[in-house]
Image 1 (cartoon, rainbow, N blue to C red):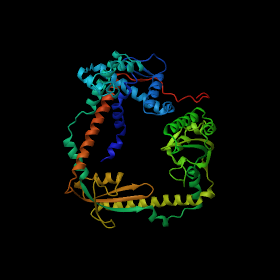
Image 2 (spheres, rainbow, N blue to C red):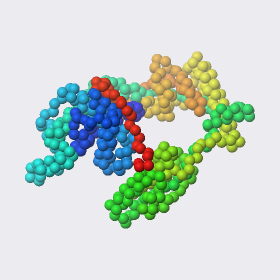
Image 3 (spheres, rainbow, N blue to C red):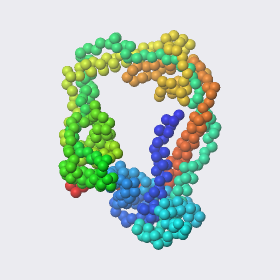
Length: 487
């Protein structure tokens, strides 16, 4: 049942992202109705552009706000996420204006009091520090009118988002039907036809083996790998936390700014440059999880274009608390087709396996044809067991779908399900029942999930409507950061 959440992750991410709209407001965008002068237009909403400079500025502010290194703000994925947020804000802003939404004074005051920076301006006697308030606004390039207009606008957007995302759709009946379907149990018997049972009946010729190797050479290649060098910055337990933080910043900045070598950072911070050969995309084998190159993000960065093609240092990665790593590719070894004599045994194994699988599938098809004429015949099947969608036992994917989709009027019935790489399995279903005990927690969780999916679908439709109404037009894609000498 809960697989449906994973199938709708993009909708869920959309809703979550929209709920963080206000995080940009107080120290960022002062108004959604006034935009920067036209530079490099990326997207236009209602004829008004979102520019590359605007995205860069917002990315820097957000990186600073979450305590990240400014190097993060230059990464294309981060900037794309910022652009997506700005676009969603503009679409919602268009909807607010078009709908002529209003916000009351009391609601605005309550909203302002919820901002930590505003709450901090109240003195112990309950009075408000107007001087510090004006200083705070000035430091962020805002006047009172802009600030209040911005906050009112954000409140309207928040109310609009919440009202749509929390739309109550009457689904008790649907929830009950779905829960019943997922609780219904069926009695199943299985009869498997696997390749391993037919291996003794196959004996491929040398010509067949050679032909298979020639046609599937890519199956017999050694993976690409790299030889790398890397440096590691570790915190000294006796060292002051602030001092280490400064070192970590130096480490990150130097490996990024002087990206053609690790030596400057190593010399400055007195670190040794270490080497490692034979690193593949799947990582190193036979090393501990604490090894600097066992980190998935480090490996991914080393096989990225910046490191692999442009020979740049990877960004500094914190692999464990107090440990930072930067690495670079020394030598790239491309994948190579292994000669036949080196893989002859594997070729024979694969050819034999495929031939045996064909025999197993053919035998299953023959048996299935016989049972279609006599479904009451349970000869050869394993002992029966009960399954349901809530408790599928060892049935997964197509097998469970096939078994649970049989109408009770057709009992007993046999279905055949192929198992790629293995063979095929026949499933005989002859009874159905409702369980005597019902788990109230599962019932409640399923009802909540149905409601959540309905709300997400409603919100996605809402955003699609306003995207069209605002005439969103993509002008230019975001460009990756410059790889010139000055970067």
